[in-house]
Image 1 (spheres, helix red, strand yellow):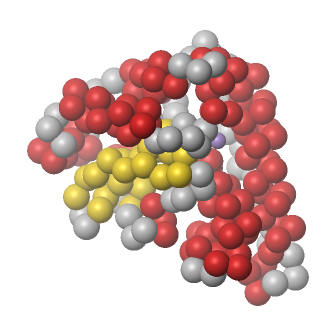
Image 2 (image 1 turned 45 degrees about the vertical axis):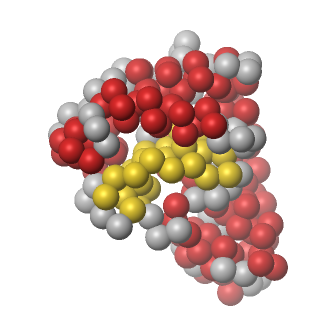
Image 3 (image 1 turned 120 degrees about the vertical axis):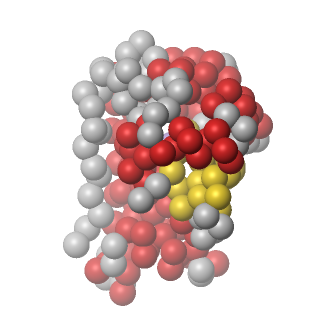
Length: 197
Ligand code: MN3
């Protein structure tokens, strides 16, 4: 069963002007699709061809000879997760259980937002900024390239893609402005609450 490129959970122009349709045409239609196509080529005819994506990511992470498969499969997973972290009219202070936990575990929303933004800004080169459950507690982490909390024993709750392909058409070099727009207007807190389980 091949790995499928999931549809965006919103129209490609739904987040304009914060993230343009043109960015999604490349980011989803070209970058994410290429990771899907590469993953399917690399698992074709192997034992992993019948596995679910998460199992493929974990198996490839455990085998240094499968670095190419890991990079592509993890990027498929990370992007599928990232799209769900976005919604039109999102962002700002959360509600629900995540709001209470950010208050009690991360020093409140303003401190969370500053720390999450800093994680994205200071991820040198390509990567991701995450909110995860680490040993049952909220934590803000970074990952480089395709690295993902799935292989670190952390439960992902929220992610921002800070590869240049995520923001360069709309923000050029201004990664901090992209992250601020993400936090203020795009975070899908309903998805984050659902991820708390
Ligand atoms: Mn990306």
